[in-house]
Image (cartoon, rainbow, N blue to C red; front, side):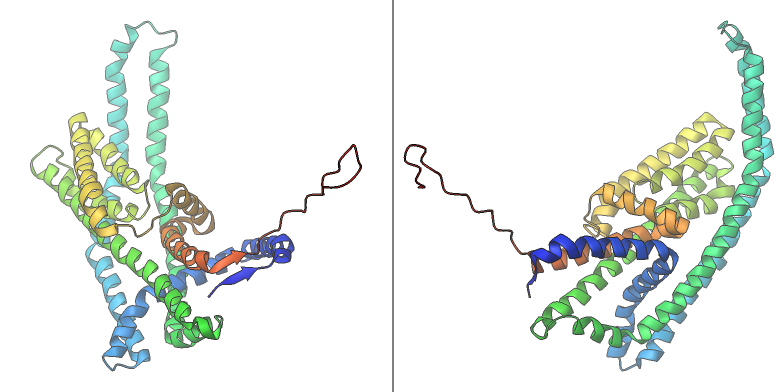
Length: 371
């Protein structure tokens, strides 16, 4: 199958189509995001439903079984991980005033040493202002976390809507597949099958690899921080191991920035205990990231994405503008899906070549004749 785009379409049609698509997408960004997300989930779960169909289980029953299993996994996660993580987060927030006081005491202890430097400003006044700013930021961090929690509840409601839409997509998967195949010419049905297979594999492979990688990183961080508390390097580590492990696992879904975002909170909290505790936490994260970069990512992720990091970062920023945290998390599978679409159509679409303008014949100045 080869699709050739005429010259008049290249000149007029394509720019107009791009502008119209851009305007339409800007008007329905939220709705478009919901349906794209539902499509990704249905593509991810469809192989499981088809496997159940292969076992002579009706499709509607297979969809019910798959979503029941998915719901069970979510419930187990919320029962086993979320309650202790929230409890540890609450304990951490309650200790913020104590951390603020320790910062003020530390700054006061540095005052005499700073005074000997004879700086051109009052060290005591500036140190007091700095301590007040840090204390205010720590005290106000609780309401900020609460606001993000409320936003999370709103995102969870949107996610439930997405699940309902994905259920309908899975139930009508065969009809949707027939519609996609009908868009291809009669002699291009093999290409249609390949297109469906590649788009489904692009999403499925990324989701499976990313979930496994995030689980291993979260588990490693939790065990590492717990071990630091067990041996006494950071005694409070055992109190926050579950929360920081869950935090590291979630941030691992964010490419490139995730490891940094996962490390900053535990390092800062450990710094309140002692600089050595903070250094130990940094060492734990460096070790885990080295294992991830040289062992886990090559063997688990492989070349699942295969696009330039700038493209991924652009998609993450766009996803953040559209849907916040959920937009960031879904940016990469959307990029993986788009990459497969481009790779599929690139060898099958060609542009009609523009013929070079005819060169006028040369005129002999002496005789006035053309060559």
